[in-house]
Amino acid sequence: MDYKSLMQQAISLAKEAGLKGDVPVGALVVDDTGTIVGMGANLREQDNDPTAHAEIVAIRDAAKKQGNYRLDELTMVVTLEPCGMCAGAIAQSRIKRLVFGSFDEKYGAVGSVWDLLRDTRAIYKPEVISGVLEDECGQLLGEFFTTKR
Image (cartoon, rainbow, N blue to C red; front, side):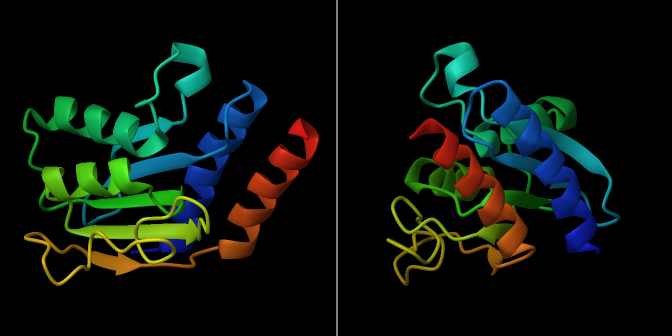
């Protein structure tokens, strides 16, 4: 699977979120052929919903389209390391693989602050691939926050 190409598509979703005033994070849920079955971008500001992170939006979209909350044959591609809420949702949906771009040193829960998905006590442990187009993903976030400060 071409993770860089998929990450580019997630970055496009993130840019759209940023243009709407939300933190620019984009996420895709794809099958083993790379076909998109769910997508999302941060909608917290737009929807006034603290749970509307890109990962949650993409999981909801994929589950609805699949007709099942178990997404155990699918991969998530997201521009930013998931937070604790999103890591929990990834585990609960049984996504088999997580691919992310930049690390989140403040809220990251897949290696930076915590590692909920690979904790020895975790019941479900998806494969994790980090750092895909890390610089590009990080730059997008850095530019967004520079304009907000």
